[in-house]
Image (cartoon, rainbow, N blue to C red):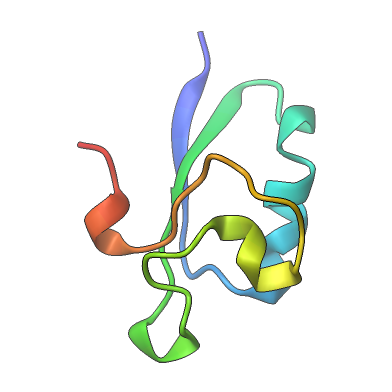
Length: 65
C-alpha cells in the first residue's frame, strides 16, 4: 500500500519530485502546497516547471483530508 504524501514548500526546485513521481515506490503525491507569494495556488503542479498537466493540484485548499 502506498503512503500519501504532500510536498511543502512546493516550487520549481521540487518539481523533479512531481515530474518523476512514478519512481517513488512507496509514496503517492496527492498535493503540493506552496506559499501564497509563489503564484502557484490553484494551479496544476506541472505549471511550476512548464511541464504537461498532471493530476496533482497546488494549494492548501486542494489538500485531500
